[in-house]
Amino acid sequence: MNKHTLKIFFIFMTLLLVVASQPALGSDWAQFQKDKVNSGITGDSAPIATPNSTMSWQHDICGGWVGIDASPIVYGDYVYAVASDGNLAKYYKDGTSVGGWSVDIGNPGFQNAAPAAGNGHIFVVNTGYGSDPDPDLIAVDASTGSISDSGSVIASTSIQFSTPITYAEDSNGNKHILFGSVNMSSVDPVNLSDGGKYYCYNVTDPTNMVKEWERDCSSAKGYYWAGAAIIGDYAVYGDDAGHLVSVNYTNFTNYEVETVQEIDASTVFGFNVNEIRSSICYSEETGRIYFTSLAGYCYSLGFNANTGQFDASNKWSESIGYSTSTPAYYNGRVYVGNNNGFSTGKLWCLNASDGTEIWNNSVGPVQSSPAISTFYGPGNEYIYVTTNSGSGGIYCVNSSGVTVWSETSPGTNRYCLAGAVISGGWVFYGNDGGYLCGCANYTRYDFNRSTDMWAYKYQIDDTPTTATDPTIEFSSGEKDAIKADDNNYASSETTDEGYYSAHRFVFKIDDNEKPWITSINVTWKGYAYSTDYVYGAKLYIWNNALSTYEELNEGANVQYEFSLNGGVISNIGNYIDNSNNVTVLVVQNGEDDGFVTHSNIQTDYVKLVATP
Image (cartoon, rainbow, N blue to C red; front, top):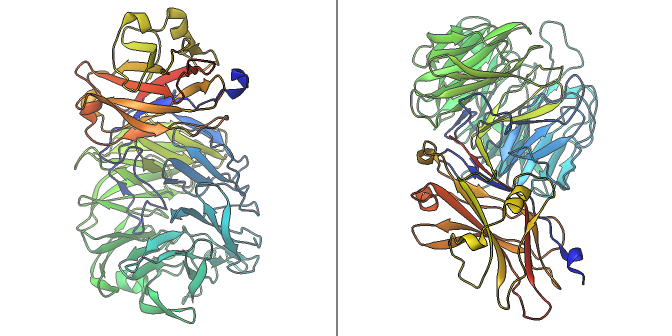
């Protein structure tokens, strides 16, 4: 075969050094407000300076007036979002497109039910705005995008599924999803809803989702944005009549679930709370649930996680104005938003013991729920909210109530109804214009031939080294070839018998950033091939403590485009030497046979990205 027909094209190399005491690529934010109790809290870092325009990204995944109105989720290395055209979008966290991914959940229209991820799948319920989608519940393989199972929850043009999906695993290892519906057929202009049910499906086997129970709304008013919290054995959620219910969600017979308690919040708090349009947030630390209502209050109510009973003696309410925002509790404080139509609104910080105001910030109409990074330590949390106005966008506010940075969302329909999510130094959100956005403030070290960056081409046997012999350094022209993603390649020389071609890259990390770096992820872009065979390549990183290269990944022996990805998440100091250098090596898998088969490697582009 001609060697040019055997060239293998690798995806670009990114050294992602994430500042977080979390796994290499950050923790999952796999459902609305992160977890089954809607905490809205993560230990991952998030941008606390104005996002870097060269790193942040935006993709128009669905044009129109109501593009993205459900919060995105993060599962593994990817961010997913549901759009009004029926598109379930998927991108790498850095905004790179995922090849071969195309998922249509059908029946375009307003989508405001946030999906949930678990068990290797993305679970989506189609809102069904003014339509009868069939199917309306879908399990999508998170890796391939194939539909593992789907079905019709109910056949109706008036029923909408407008609550986020809650995903939970019970004490026996069974996996469940819960969500609610509302009947929009005979609405009056005040109450806006009429009827609905809550549903629970077993998704232990995602190829066979099984309905376990459905429960009619006792008040006959239905569920709009009112997501459940799973607290031990109990699911707790509110409705459009201001009722709260606790059910033992794993105890059911003939599709009927055990109701532990139902209360009228208006009776408990002594005034008409109106519709509960927030999800329920639960804090194990305080033993309380938190929620808001359209009456304009944030509420705290005791809940016994052992019995599933509400504690009406342990309560407070605080006037904040009309709210659909799900509160988030952290370190003795409750963070929550409110909105006055599409014009004004605030982010509030309340004392968790009695609800009294600590501060408020008039960021704009906040219908979304706060996402909070606790990475920077107690008293230094950062709160991220989106605003639902014509000039809406995202705000980062510190624990003192001061706006640290803000960004107007892209496009013309800048309304951001749904909230933000955080993972591994990134914050993600969407808007009505159909844009999915990722914000970060990484520092990018592009290869630029400076004295702080080196590149070497050489051949190795089975013991690669970190030698800096000038005779193996890339020429100036070859360095120019690898400083931009332009299909201009720097290549290896012909190898000797028994040797493998290799490229090595050295980047110097800024001294101020070095103490903060706690994870490294690596990818590379170029060709790796031999004269007569397809071999692929191996990716390494140098471990100074062990004086050896650690293998991060071995690419498959294929002819077409693929990526080498790998990383380290512990003992990061071992990978940054005393001169602040990080060294990466790519080695072609095939050795020179001394006859016609030579080992070849080429590099198109190299970069390093660090989170300060």
